[in-house]
Length: 459
Image 1 (cartoon, rainbow, N blue to C red):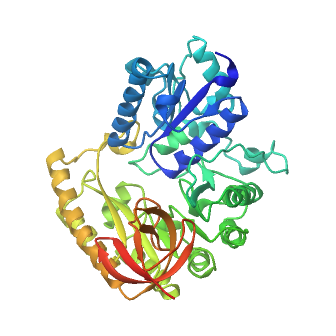
Image 2: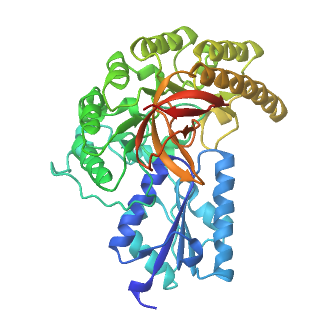
């Protein structure tokens, strides 16, 4: 078999940041002579971009790798390769526990991914890395971080794997926060902003590729620009991205409440072409729990932030995630959280039960709740937010929305309004429309189903 006939399929798990990584890997592989295929059954090599965030995600990643390995007996596949956060986080340990995978590659293998896959297909054994704390791999000084970079935009190595009208666009990588429950900084590294010129160049490329909504992703978007000498750089960049020809809507993900400054709130809430959408990582509301999480805030400051948002954009979308059952969480702490959720009137809230994560400070804490108690608290809070989120959706009946059409199947036209982020915030079904995928449709909400809306196109 010649090099030009080698095919590869990329299977992506986890967050939108992983989707960008997969498309960058796809670009490098295509550049290196591999043919990209959608179906793993048609591929010589199956690359699984894993997620290593929480236990459920780890299990899904391992299951996907095992399913891909079955194709070596039942299909065309000659090799199955693990990449992504699980591979980076566990390296040699994952390789030893999962012999069904032919190789486990870390982030440092990405620049030479095509050569790595050719070597694996040729029978060479790849020696997986021993994980280390990636926060120590970059100089602390912002000047040192960027000293060796040229002023020219970096070459774009990305190949879209999804032809839909929405695409993630990476603002930065890594995180400098030290939340006690989170291991992400240890395997994603310190926070590094992409330069505005590179972000804008990729935005233009994505628009040329048919993307109509750009979803700005990072581990902490409110930190963007701090290592480039301008913490308000996102406020400057957002209008520029929104002005790119072909881009109808820009959406920002993952804002830290304690870092969400008034100028950024105003930019997101009032800039034409930027969705008034606030993905605020509250995690809890009890000051005592937040301190143990090494986070900041309380119900009054969080509600004050929401008041700022809604004073500028009354119909703004607000979503968040909360962790229930953190070590030392009392019934009183849980009630503070529930009271806050009732007052906050958010569109969507994700509820997660606490579990120990390798290498985190919280894993060493005392006063842990047993698994049954955590599960019961998760159930209680989940029941509450499902009711609250449904009520918030009902409040939108009669509201005018702009819906980006994403799919049309069997005559059903489905998309998302400005307050609905990709995949996690529900959808809007359109009636009385002849719109096509990629169209931005003005409509009025006429009914709801949980967090999902039904809207009628306005003439």
